[in-house]
Image 1 (tube, rainbow, N blue to C red):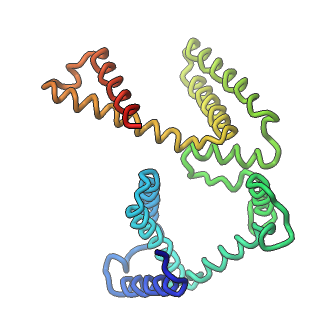
Image 2: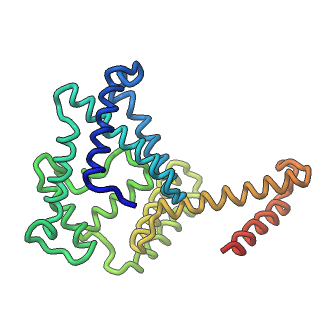
Length: 265
């Protein structure tokens, strides 16, 4: 059951009060800085991501709280330096959302989510202090897989994209051929470069076919872990060690794990 708006605002206010007191009275909270919290923030976001993948409501609630703590903590540190506070953060976000949704709050027009994304990118370039170039909005520190996807999305919003999504497979095959050629040539540096081109083209194909490449890879990671754990468990039940198993024996157990997965679906 959802809480009332008043209850939500009251709960947020109480949370701010708790942090104020911790910042004043707790030795650990008192000494925290932006730099000391940064790595913990990244860890908390990954833990939230894990909870979302698990679709575990209790864990999602818990991890959202941990991320929220970091948000208000950074705002508190800034407030102590007379730079901004959590109200300024909220106001800036509200203003940005209104500005970037003219089809809702103004006279703009957008009938599809693709049109919304295109308008969003164009409005970002017009903002004061905003990005000077289209790809400036892609954070340099993003993991490479996600960064590639964001680069392609932003370029596509400005028309730099395949006319027909099927055409991307010609590029994928071309890049794979170049990878295979460098494998024969034996130049490690060029092989790495060609692998990068191949992966970039494959990520582009996933984007065109509305596949979330990060989710897709994570599903495969989990699938592999589950099947390999099955091999390890069954090996232990046989009184053997993994290194004592032949590849054919492990393949047979792998296929057993696959069959069990299909039966559970």
